[in-house]
Length: 175
Image (cartoon, rainbow, N blue to C red; front, side, top):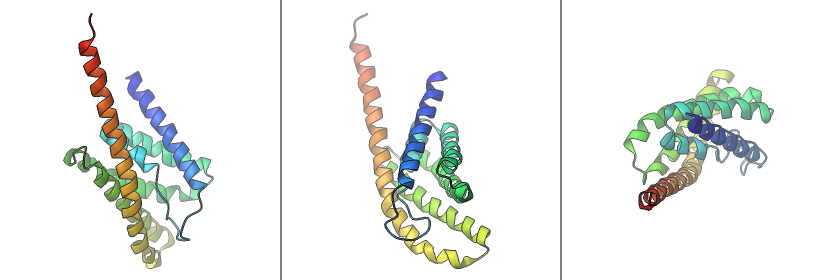
């Protein structure tokens, strides 16, 4: 139990650091909501390594604390809508995808995140005009989601290998 909580806390801190650092990077294109989404590497990793409950706690903590630390509390609703839709999509994907397909979760999660943020913007601003950003956001989601998904897949597979090696070494160790 303590190990699980510690692992989740470390991942939350790492996701926050990534989120805050990424907020300092100027967007490559001046389109609201367009960013790399590097903190999603942690979300995808947590979903496949820790499970849904810990992932949700990490995600909600990152969204809340990230918004406070970045001074963008008004943007919290957008992050929450995108993050929760991404999370809900990842729930069934974690059972359907193999370790070689985790990158797909990154892509589809990024798409879901942008759809959730756009839906929130439509509701908050009471106009469908913000939906005109959607094609560019979805295209960027495929590119950045592939990057984050492949990164998470690499880390998950390396951790699996590390645990397997540790297990093998313990079997070989004389008592």
